[in-house]
Image 1 (tube, chains in turn green, cyan):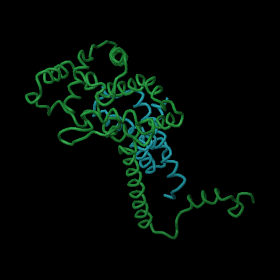
Image 2: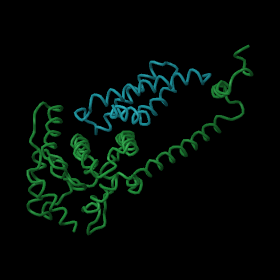
Image 3: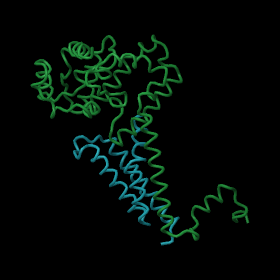
Image 4: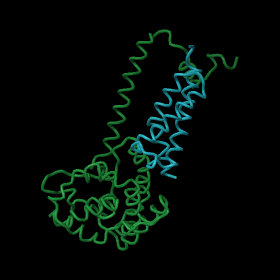
Length: 233
Length: 85
């Protein structure tokens, strides 16, 4: 008898044990044990996931040194209130589905770390525009979802903002613009030709969504960056 | 490609995968399990689009529904194989 329990391999025996009704445990015991095991598993999974959101984890890769240095010069790292936005605040969505998607897609970062794609300053500069483009595209498509975890037009008091900032934010609301339309490069340096590339991103996404092109990029992005940098100092 | 893989993975360990599987385990009718899983896929996409179909991307909806269908069917198969009632 080839398929008798005695002749089965260990995989077959485990398979058989899984599908055999439990006679030694009550339903209550199995329910409670499953519930507790579920809590332990889910808690452990979520805790591990949160560990990958820490700044220490993000910058533990050699290739992250350049962008860490640039980020440390900005208002999101150092400011009068001490409230900070770390890597994951801007690059990892809060909502579960989007977060898991971002985590799975981040596997490519591990691959490029191992492959040494941006392992030298020269290689980093060579790829800076394409890396920035990927982030802009994601932010533009999601209506700057990660920015809006902290910043919200509904709670901005324009009377406390400088005149130019208030008028630009009002224009952003009126013209249905999104944060990244003006605030590119607020945490990392910008490569040459970024404005043209951002315009391409905007046009590509606009043509995909409505077939119409929109002029939604800031005319004075450099001014915004210099203003924020000054405030950070 | 990576985006599609990410979306599939996210749905597997989100509502369509987990709730779809659980709902599928409540019935022996595979079609009903698949249907419930698929509906969860639609509901989940809508929830993450803040209740508006205009924010729903077709590919995301499609992947969520397919994952829900598979999870629901698998749940029913588990019920058939693993329960005597």
